[in-house]
Amino acid sequence: MKLTLVLLVAVAVVSTTFAKTVPSGKRSRLPMELLGGMFGANFQAPKVPKDYVPNPRIVEDRFTSRINHFDPQNRDTFEFNFLWNDEYYRPGGPLFIVVGGHHRTSPFFIDETHFKDIAALQGAFLATNEHRYFGTSVPTEDLSSDNLRFLRTEQTLFDLIEWIDFLKREVMRDPNAKVILHGFSYGGALASWARQRFPNIIDGAWVSSATVRATVNFEEFTEDFGNTIRIKGSDECYNSIFRAFHTAENLLDAGRTNIVSSMFNTCEPIDAENSLQVELFLHLMTLSLELSMFDDFNIENVQRVCNVLTDEQYETPMEALAAYLKDRYSEIRDCFDLSFENFISILGNVSVDAPQNLEYGLRQLNYHICTEFGFFQTAKSRDQPFGSKVTYDLFLAECSAVFGEWLTQEVLYDGVRLTNFHFGATDPRVTNVLYTNGGIDPFRHVSITEYTNLLANARVTPAAFYTEDIRAISGMDSEEMLETKHMAEEYITTWLGSPISPFRK
Picture 1: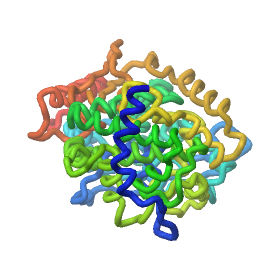
Picture 2: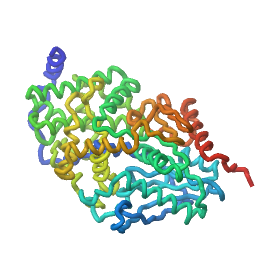
Picture 3: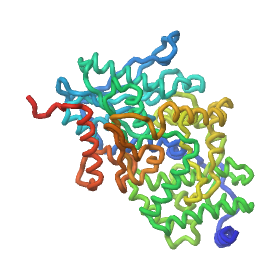
Picture 4: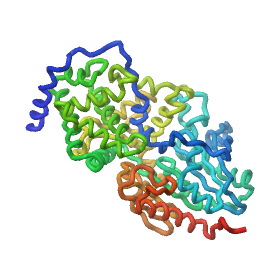
């Protein structure tokens, strides 16, 4: 109670300095990055450098696969995109695959990574595939709920395996070639599951930040985000964010919605009686900070943002947070749109060519996590600074509103349960897989960080962030990072048996 009174008193100063009217009729576009952040789209693929120029040796092609691998009466097919490069390949060498995930395919991941460097040493054929329903690999005419029923992990695994068989037989002309998979995030999970399900075809897999444990309530993410703010920012910054969020929550609980609405420049007054709107407001604020602090996957941005949030020019932490968020999106919106209906309408667009679907894969990703994975970033843990009101009720309501009333809580929970049951979550009983994670990567909580059995292992690189270990070795690598990258090379060499020497004539 004392904390509540202190926070309410703290905002008394700002209540007289902000008008009570809320702007209307202005630009209110919801930034696409916020939509993507709500469902983890911004963490699906590491950032490709802006100055990256694709290797001219990389070839783009299409592979024909069945839409439904498990129905012998359905012979419908579709094509998915894939890229390959035989620049380093020597006859008898292995096939190295970067497994596609919830993102458009990019040549960067077979061109500028540590996996590519290992492939060059091993004389490997390099390739990467585009996951069904993403980019230009959509098997249906639109993305209606009915058409999305073929977006299943099991279907994707069969796409992958049949494509690998095609590459070995028809492209490499070596059906006995060994196969090593690599992947990150959900693509990393797929790579590990492919080794688990098809050990006769896949000889090993190195996976980074692999999201192998499905969960509805991913409260560890906000906990870890808070810890990163302490580590890379300061305790002062953490406390400022804590006070800002709890002040906003307490004001809304006390009926002082005019103060919060005006300060954060919402397009319409916040309806404190509408729990979904309140949760959406708080969650989008958290995502805005997350995207700012993790911009370009450079966590040094945390300190930059913290410098603004703790600037002495602001009288209260909530004023500092509101000013920062307003400035961040000033070029694309005049006010903060909290309409749940507008939010749903963007995700409800079933067009394959809609930018949110073609470029970001939002509807497809949203469907997949609503039916198999969850990963909802709630704020129910006490060990985080982003308030206490964001629950998975917000995400459950969104899933049902976008895809239909059939997508109930029971459907979601059963989907998450079956994903963990089918693949083993953090105990997959698999060999020849190396799981690597960063010590401050929030997704390590749904990955495997401790796992040792015959020819399989897990390693966490201290102070490393999301998928840092997939990058090519550089002079900026810490000793711990170099050890992780060398470990990946050693395991792959072991899985291949007698490697092909790059100096062998």
